[in-house]
Image 1: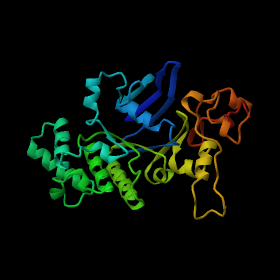
Image 2: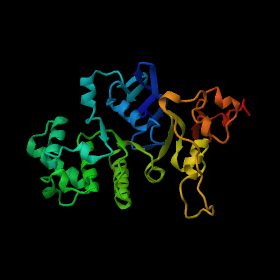
Image 3: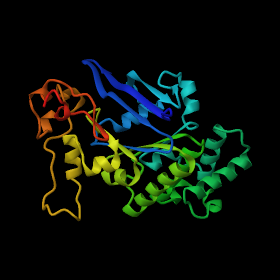
Image 4: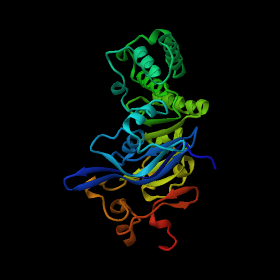
Length: 324
């Protein structure tokens, strides 16, 4: 089996406090192959964005990687000095943030920002970098890129700004793109265009994408595999078709049951009781046990480890042979 493009092993992200360290991401592991889209889904506070920030080296202090390993194309990158990580960021790993306005400087034209990014990661002269910037704008679907390259961010719609951000993420020709809620706040037709664009990039360039979102509809449309996160842990990970059609973990079952379907005869959607626990109040054992309808005594005292169930890996005591 070939080496995965990105490999994360037992990653732990902590926030030190006066009362001890709070664990926001708790020993998660996953791989992403070249040309694959891995969707990472879960409620707000599950640790999705923190995982992406840890991989790319953009954790906000005092957050830190407490333990674990991150490998990019076989090279360990979680312990690199800040200067070396800066050279990887943008060149080998691209980042698409949720709000394009925070990624674009309103005082500079789109072309200036693209040219600067391209020249940072290549030896192209300004004229060549401008030609490359026009190519990128065309590739992400900006109409009349030769003209729009000299526009300011406020002269673009939200969907067009997000396309520009994707062009910026691709400027260094990265092998991995981390997309953090790239379709949030966009209307449905624009969401579909952005999803189609990300899928085309994977197909044409062999780029791996880590797609972070809370929208299972986006995951079902765009991802090859999906990792369902809850309270800093991965509850279930597997091929998106199997996880959507036949979820195994009770939390994933609840997520799938809360999505409306035109084929369903049910009049009410499934509701998961309670809320995601705060970092200061993550329960002992399985972190989902206070909200789980299938909970039993072992769930309250021992944390389940991922085990293979069919095509997915599931962290749930329901699938432990000894328990049964």
